[in-house]
Length: 106
Image (tube, rainbow, N blue to C red; front, side, top):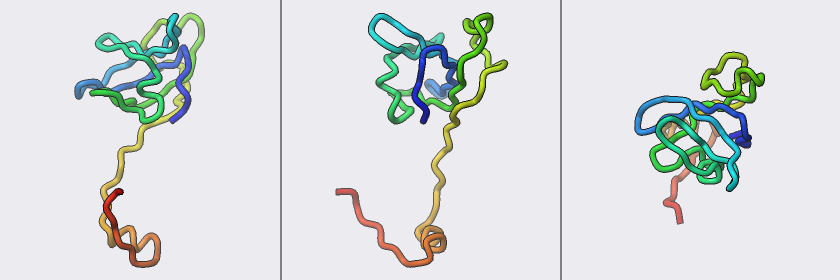
């Protein structure tokens, strides 16, 4: 995921619904703010997930006139969440070209 910066617009899934949020500068640091949630960016920056929120897309900054709008318009798509793919061991073996064994995480 890209580093989240003040002025970025993010598309999020929050409690199962997709909506937009903005990354804003506050006196305590960066925050993710939407109509239904707010939390510090440091909570979501590494994994893209926090509580019931998942970042789906990150858009860059826009012109001054469009900065307050929660719309994509001329913003450039910087990052998009790719859902994990469900694969079988045999599919992984075919890609790698050799047999593998799966062990439990330690």
